[in-house]
Length: 540
Ligand code: AMP
Image (cartoon, rainbow, N blue to C red; front, side, top):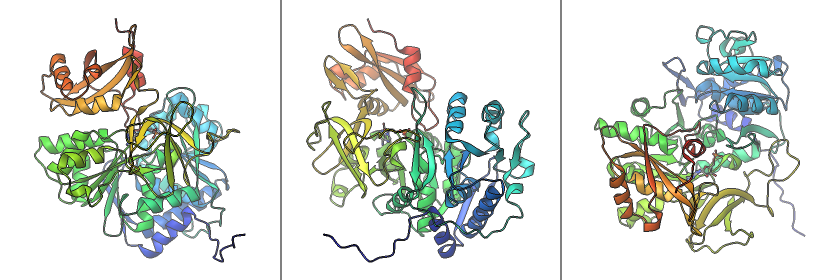
């Protein structure tokens, strides 16, 4: 019989991170782009005080442990304060994706039973459209002062954040919660059916945030300045708002300004060393930097995920700009990052192209996470780098069941991700496709991700997407969408010829559609469903 360890059993709580940050790194800075434009500066100590004031204000509004507070907001300092005030007092911080369809937004706010919704002024028109359909919301709180809070026609219960917290005590006794209590809620941006809620526990978030600081993950520390471009409304901004405070890292929030020039300016003016975002954001940034012949003065490392990072972009960051790329994989159901690519000491001796290829994979699991790939019968496939099947994941911050569901989401204790992947002998995982995006042709599979990566390597291509189109003979065939870089005159024959040198002949798409832009969703992923709706016919 194993003995019980004789250590204190203190719970892992989000309030613990805040109080640690305030006590140990009180002077550390938080710089935040306000929704109305200017930069705002505060410190950890001040943010902690204001979070305690907000906790008191929410209690006075009648909210209790277990109540849900929604947010429809950018990455900014008030949103950060809310992250801590809400979860710290035992309530659930429900971050809503503002780019959900309004009907879905109404659905998630009602399903979560949000009693208060915090929003940024940008989203006032959205609130106007949905407020009447969310009867249990007793206050809509604009994350601004009175001067920057718009009146919303037909919505009487609009408050402003500064007046709400004003006059409240900066002391709050954070409850000693069970670490498995729900702390934050995020709904999947499902393309079919209603979104499903993932209720993260304090334990899951604190553990993930702790591993996020490790040197081979994000490597946060008091020496660094981190700019999370990944939205706080989706998967907890990869837990950076927690990891930064846990490690004492200076935080820089971009607010609503996510375009290349604004991000570049912020990176330079605040001497950002680490950033995190989806590939589409980095494409915008690199285009700006290239066009204006700029360099990064302080940026050392960028973490990227959410969709596959094209190898051409990895090469540009690493070789042209000397910025290391860390490519991670995760999903709403995994709290934040579950795997991360990294170059070992020996990898760093390899030729540049080999290094790019390693980074373009989704990498190794971070401690606390296990993965495997299985075939259609659930049999585990070998870790040989070529056997591909559905990726299964389990670990300390992986969903067990969706919010308010009576049934487990697991298959034999593992969460089926819907991603198709390979794992090699070293444990490095590579996402080959989503099960629903993979193109089945003549009994074989074409990876849409691989084709997109090949296309984007063409110097005239700004963005690329591939979908499968029904085909009478082959079942499905690939259709390629291209957005040209400004001023480029690439034609169909040029790109198909280029691809023929990069991929197997039977992978070369049957047709190419040139578009001005691709439909991109709220989490920065190309919405292939939209492309399917418009272009998904039958090849003859
Ligand atoms: P979401 O839950 O909306 O964040 O979407 C999660 C999905 O995004 C995953 O299941 C993958 O299909 C995709 N994804 C996330 N990170 C990556 C990555 N680094 N490479 C390829 N696909 C990714």
